[in-house]
Length: 295
Image (tube, rainbow, N blue to C red; front, side, top):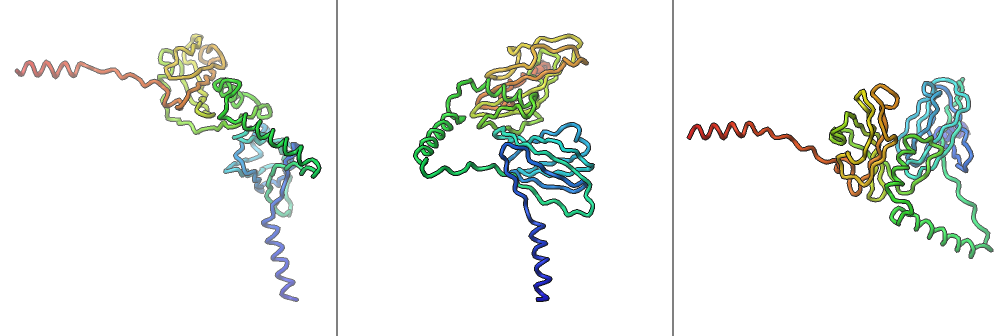
């Protein structure tokens, strides 16, 4: 009996240390309390980006890795809503975080967020449910990325990229099949607009089927306003759309805009027209004249 009296609390202590709180997402905000200076882990099992109010920038540290969030508050936080958006589907999960000072309190257990499953149908409705399931399956098949889109893909991708850069997370429309791709920061964009005093820089890129959209920031370096014309872009593009049709003089708020460049079958790096190097023929002329003089 004396042995059991000691072993049981140890076993229970291990169980508590490894417990995970399950929260079901049913389109209602999930309350996630935090303790100041204690990290709490949230398992989501999907890659998400987190929308955080600016007021929490200095009091809440958020790290994301492989579908897992690590939250750590450095000061008390009043109830504040965070938005977790699935990178692949665009679906949004809302959580309300609070943080209080932990005084001799046990660490909070990790949280696992799962999507609620629909309740099973009654046996009398099996035939109806089966018919609805078949119809739903057909609808999903028709809406797969490989099928024909009612809206042209360049338009769909351009709109999706613009929403990701400018729209609030709660207003983003899901786009099944789209994936965000890693962009190569070392891509040389100097020859994208060689005749304009514009500095381009990469912002992001997405792919759907065999189409790519790349968001490129354009900044005017001159003291004059510039009208933007997609026909002067030096690249093999399916379409090009500017967030604004002109650039204001350098130093003003209007000196920067974004170009959404859509390519097919290749990314922007492969689509940019290679620069034509200028060949200095003077060295050849010198060698030829030297050879003639020797003869």
